[in-house]
Amino acid sequence: MKSTEGFCLRFAEEKDSNLIYELIKELADYEKMADRVTATEEVLKESIFERKVAEVMIAELDESPVGYAMYFYNFSSFIGKPGIYLEDIYIRPEYRGRGFGKTILSYLAELAVKRNCWGMEWTCLNWNEPSIRFYESIGAVHWEGWRIYRLTGEALRNLADT
Picture 1 (cartoon, rainbow, N blue to C red):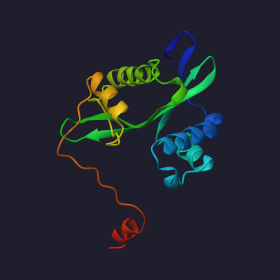
Picture 2 (picture 1 turned 60 degrees about the vertical axis):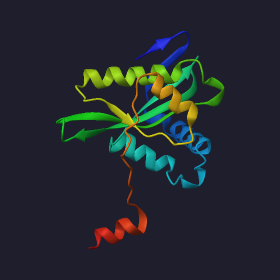
Picture 3 (picture 1 turned 30 degrees about the vertical axis):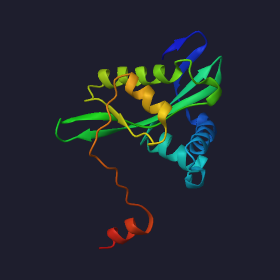
Picture 4 (picture 1 turned 90 degrees about the vertical axis):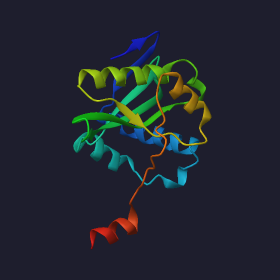
C-alpha cells in the first residue's frame, strides 16, 4: 500500500467497521447531510465485508485515522470495461492540504490501471469549491449536460410494484 513519512493507505478490515461509520458521519456533517445517514455499523459491515459490494481504504498518519475512500466498480457499455466509482473521499479538516487526498486518488488511479478499468468517476457538490478546484487541478473533467437521478423509498417501491 502507499506509505510515506508516517502516512499510510491501507485496505479496511472488518474490525474497522465502527471507524468507517464514524468517518461517514463526519463526511455527512461536512456535506450538511447528517440527517440523511441511515447506515449503521452493522449494515456497513454486512455490505462491505460480507457482501463485498464496496471497498474501503483507510488513510492513517502515524497509525491515527485521518480519512477514507469508499469505491465500487461500475461498467461502461459504450467502452465495454469496468470503471471505479468513488462514492466517498474524505480527509478530516485538520489534515487537509497535506496531499493525502491526492495520494488516495493516485492509488485508486493506479488500481484502475492495474485492473484494466476505463477510468474513474465521482460526484461533487456544487458548493464545494475547494474540492472542485482540487479535482480540476489533477485533470478531472466535469461532464456538463448530465444529471444524476435517484429512485429511492416509496418511489422505488411503487415502481417495483408495477
